Length: 258
Ligand SMILES: Nc1ncnc2c1ncn2[C@@H]1O[C@H](COP(=O)(O)OP(=O)(O)O)[C@@H](O)[C@H]1O
Ligand SMILES: [Mg+2]
Image (tube, rainbow, N blue to C red; front, side, top):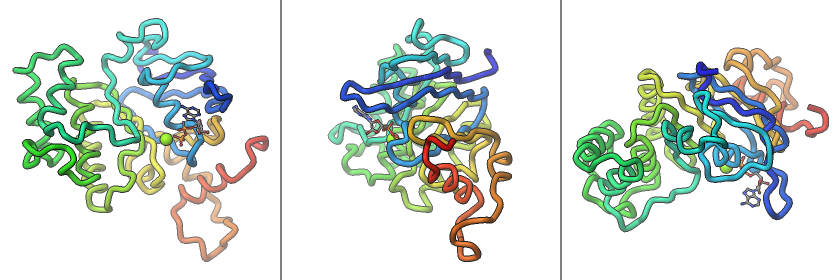
């Protein structure tokens, strides 16, 4: 069990308005993994991250983080977790350095410890020169990086990133990939959702595809790529990558057929 960073068993979520977001998700993310969760809008990706990070209350099922039952011992289970939510949610009028340092306060980390740590992270993530700016003076991509810095200040072992590169330009996206790779090389487990399939191809060790609240395929990136057979409706004209081909086939089928 303890070699798994995340284990979900038959996880279900129906929202108060009756929307069924997850219909029984069973998923395993090995410790140290770079795991990409792929799926179309509305598939249930953010709901899954919300449940894992304690923001969404599940309707049923089980979830453990590094072997700790997240519903029985929520605080203990979430202590090693950092999260970068899908929506930009930094206070636009707060200074960059304060946003990162104040987050450490929620984890009981003294300011004297948090300050040098925050500066080191800002430097690594390329925001050192924005230290004294307020958040709204940053570009969208920079605010996204600021959210990553904030998520890292308590030294989490497991980082959840919900579409971290959405709307980020190609260069910044590549820089973010490099940075995320250095995190996994230090042993941090990463679960990321993305719409950019080439991002998953570049980064992920394991991939799961979710559609209509159900996992329709999961495996190593090589196992997923092996599902490509070159037969697409576009034939020779198809110019996407192999993962894109597999993804389209998995998500364009009616859910009943999976
Ligand atoms: N707070 C909410 N109340 C009602 N329905 C919601 C809520 N949040 C998400 N949903 C619905 O749940 C489904 C899954 O949404 P979400 O997890 O955000 O998908 P994704 O992140 O893959 O786009 C969608 O149908 C969405 O409209
Ligand atoms: Mg989402």
